[in-house]
Image (cartoon, rainbow, N blue to C red; front, side, top):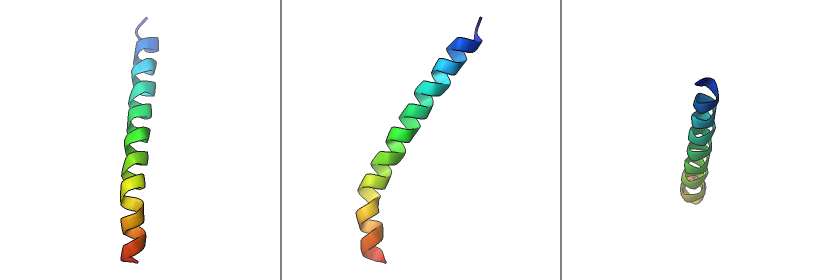
Length: 36
């Protein structure tokens, strides 16, 4: 069946997106706080 493969892809993409978002927040956070 193809559903487990799709779920695995979705989980992997979710983890990648989450880590990328955390990186963006980590790098942009201090600058955003300084601007305010």
